Amino acid sequence: MFHSRTPFATPQALTDWLKPRLPSDSLASWGVKPGTKNVHNLWLELSEGETSLVDSSPPLRTVNVVTVRILGKDDLILVESRQELSDGSVRDRFRPLSEKMKPHETPEEAVARAVKEELGSIIDSGIVRIVPGSYQKKLEERNSVSYPGLPARYVLHSVDAWMEGLPEEDFCTEEKEEYKDFDGNKGLEKAVSVRKHYWKWVSSDSSELLSLLWSIILIEEFGINSKCVEFRNLENGLRDFGSFAKVSSKSLVPTMRTDAGVDKLFILVSAWFCF
Image 1 (cartoon, rainbow, N blue to C red):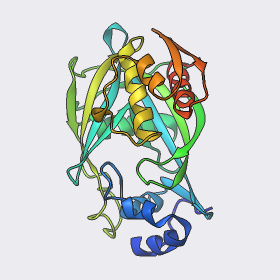
Image 2: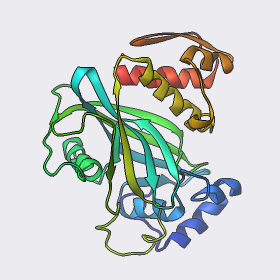
Image 3: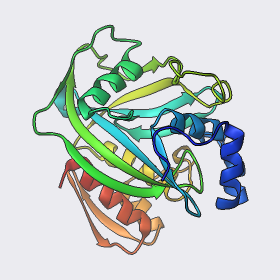
């Protein structure tokens, strides 16, 4: 396994290493397919110690991620609905505030940094209070959306938190250069970075939240852009994939779990509501 500092001197060296280990069409789509990142991004992640790679075919990317469920009034939760990237593309997100962790960073330190980086443009000195006993850690393995064809192992560190001073309506924040403190500029200019974050308050026990989770399935499991597909409710959407689920305000109980998407949705909903 490669650890915190990349063994690759340049992004081109990393590309040469990846080529025989990945399908050619997968690598060629990086930075070209809307919402994806490019090899310069992966090289920077390795350089910063945010990512490690296992030498296999295909390589396995491991990332530690902190996820912050910011709680609002009236049982609302803040989710990032989409991101505007430096190349002009838009990436759907539909998830709570999330950030890759730095080497030797504690979850508490990562939470403070993530909030400052992603919400700092509208809050000068927002105080984040982590809900006692809310920390959870779990492992998730799936194909990377940012790097198609590259399987990923995500070590997820999640907390609930309170934060004052946020707008009560949907809002947008701007992020400075993602790797502005990087010691060197090789690959920095060509990397795809996040320029704007779009945030939305959703009810933790509403069908709206389940719809957002279903959108994740469409994007990550089936490669479908949620804006191109309209489902009047979650049950109809699941039927379209040959499965059926009964949905209540805080539970999802599949009666047929033969479809990968249904299994994935069940896992996501279970993780979200911690049952």
